[in-house]
Image (cartoon, rainbow, N blue to C red):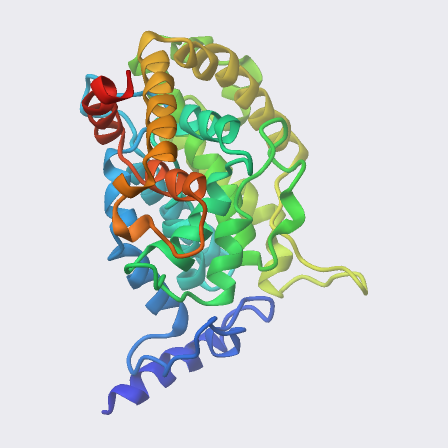
Length: 350
């Protein structure tokens, strides 16, 4: 059997997916045309490129919520990414969508996240005149910063899913929900929210900020009383309310299938999100460690904006201004590296 036949067989299997699934052979392609891989579909190739990227490796030392926690079991940006991938693959598989595409988007969605979680994103957004959004930076990582400025040259579908994965903090299905162009990208977007809401409960309990029994009654009644039950409840609800995506359910003419949740589940997750913001995110954002992180990022930004010659060559893209290069460099740092580097430049900085 030839290698070429292997990829063709995989593409033929995709024809058995839902009529609404995204087929790799029908991809809108890459920015730079390439010969297809002989053994992998286009989306499988994208997934592998993301996993082998330097930005993906650095996720293991980047904060999710709690900065430099003392315990070994707190969620990092990498473990969060893997949980998003697991939830997205489960939903995509159940709805007969393209699991490879959902996996690739999930694994790449946070590659551009700044150190120190959302605190880092807020600081860089305030400092950089152009603002900073980790979803946009993630696309910049795969397009320009990886492989010494060549980028990973991913397919349009994976790139679009990465840049549109963010959503409103006020409503799970609120502002920004309809920006994703494929059902697989919608799956990743909702899986991202379900992953962080559930593992952030565990981390907040571990940090002593909340107790399980303090979760709002409606949340415990709808989602369940443990992490496993909550994730299972959410996945089942999404699958049941998105069944039209399988192609096995008639739709009114002009309607398109979408990834959705029941009103009861939406309300419960929105209540949970509000609860976590008040009891966990805002509290951790006022900690001494959070202030140290903010100070470190401000020092780094000012120093490298004034000394662009100190920025490593891989972040010195021709034609980019020093502030853009500074943001690229800082956003790629891990938490501990940013803290250590800020301390090293302090004598020069002061």
